Image 1 (cartoon, rainbow, N blue to C red):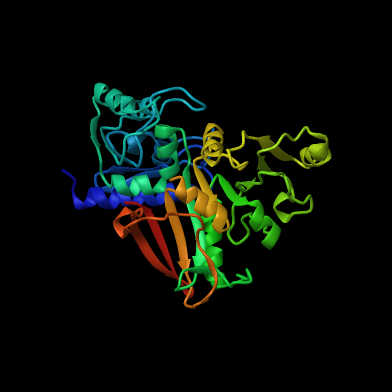
Image 2 (image 1 turned 90 degrees about the vertical axis):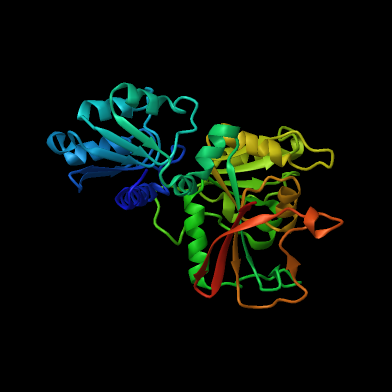
Length: 368
């Protein structure tokens, strides 16, 4: 059904889409290549919400003469509705595109096959499904949020060969090299929110922002702090653009001054109903973030919060950096998980794209 040239051109479109990795949220990352007589005549990628979509930019790049009769390779189904920009289907039809090859159908209920159907009605030869897994890898959060209302949750951690995240005294800075840590910042940059817990804030005082890679957008910093214990001087609060999630009433006199001070600094505090144990309801928190159009949530937290998320089945992906060292009697990756009677009862994960980064092995795991 598809030729080697088709695959090569779609890979080129996927590469273009990845240029929007840090900027397109809450929109998906999309790339488009126009080909005529075997020659690439136009290309484009979506940069940020509210700006032109990939198809429109590729058509403009080609110009009207070269776009006429061309084949469009697009990493996601063209839209057929009016949002912040006009429908891409109309742009394809007006440009005279004769053939459309798409990697994946758009899960957005406003599109969801309607764009492909409309293109067929307009006489465009449409094919869908080329390199769909690669297209999904570019936009896991967008696909999950469109189908479930929830963001994609990725937990990043650094561990020793014997599975420890820190020494028994809590010291963990640093068990991986700068190259590995900088690579972690690139994963922060693609996320809509970076989430941590009050324990990590107290112990490490992290900034939780993106510093090691260039980006025009900082993700929202989210702190899970059930009892509203956060210190006003915590680095994670610097500059605002942070969210503190609590499970107590911030209007009570004991919290009122801190609540107002954070508000003045541009830090939002939201109260969620506590669980029976007085904790923040993590599943509800993810619903709230999904309602705020958060596609990907990047978690860097301690064993307690990580374990709670794992126990509740809230994690979609692990991003694990394994350092070439043994820490012995150190701290575990996650606490409070299990117990299971037999190994086959434990959750299974699937390895994905192991890569050497600096002195560490970066391994991704997704649900099996």
